Length: 393
Image 1 (spheres, rainbow, N blue to C red):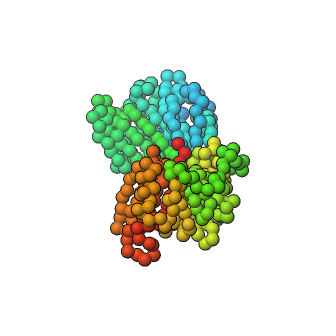
Image 2: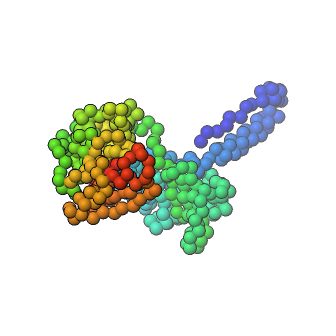
Image 3: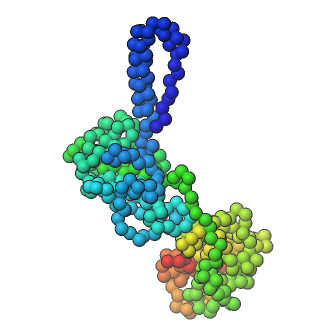
C-alpha cells in the first residue's frame, strides 16, 4: 500500500535542538504522531478494489498466474483440462487443512492447459473450510468469522448490490463485470463466512501468445461446388455466380476476388470469433468469422458460417439450391418447397415476408425474403434476398 509522506518542519526541529532533553521528548512525540498518521493513511488507501485476500498470513493479489499461486504451497486438484481463450473454469486448491475454489482464466489468444492459466478469482466457502481453521482477511481489516454487515458497510460503503436470502445476506461490491467482491454474512452466526474475490484482467507483464500462420487441414480439404445442388435441403448458396457450401473458408472468397478491408480483425483467437469486412466490385459486407483451431490464426484461415446476398446487403445475383433464386416470385418459391416436401416458418413486417426452412437446429437454416411493399425499388411479391447459415456444433 502506498503511504503519504509527511513533510518535516525543519525550522521547528532546529529550534529545539538547542535543548537536548526537550528535543528528545519532542522527537518521541513527533515520531508517535508520524506513526499514527501513516497508519491512518495506510488504512485510507486500502480498498476492496485492491483485490487482495490474506489467507493464514499470506497475501494474494489478483490476478496472478497459477504458477505463482501454487508456489505458496497450494495444490491444484488433478486435471488434464484445457482452456480456450476468454473462458474460465473453477477448481479446488488445498493447502494443509484449507480448501479454496480458484477461478482459472485464459486471457491469451491460444488454448492453454489449466496449469498455464490465470488465477482471476478466489472463493472461500464454509462448506469446505470452517472459519476457525485459519484467519482470512480482506483490506480494511474485514475478517472472516469476525466482521458483521455493519463492519463491512463501514469499511467499504454501500454495496453495489444486496441479496437477502433465508440463510445469509450477500453484499456485492462491483467495479466492472467480473471485477467484484462478494461477501456473505450468515444470519445464524451474524458474521462473515463466505468470501469471493474476482478480478478478471491481465496480470502485469502477461504474454497473450503468438498467431500461427499454419493453414488448418480442414481449410485445405474444403471443396467448392461447381454448381448449386438440386437438393433444396443442401446448405449451399450462390453469390455473384460463385457457389459455396456452408460454412466456407474466408480464403476461398479471397480466391474469388473478395478482399479484406483494413478495419478487419487481423488475428482470431483459438476457438473464438472475430469481425471482418469483405469487399468486391464496390460491394461490401461485414460479418463474423470463426476459428475452429486450438491456436490463434489469421482471418484467412477462419470460416464464414453465414452468407446473405440481395436486398440491402449485397446488390448481386444470388440463389439457394433447388431453383430458389433472387427474382423468383413467391408462388413459384412455395411450389418448390411443397414439391420437395420441405416445411417452413414465416413471418412478416409492413414491407417484407420472411421464410425460414431447412432448420433442424439452431445455427442452420435457409432464409428467403419476399418484398410485399409498394416501393418501386424492389419488384413486389418476389424474392429479393437469400441467406444460408450452417454453423459448427
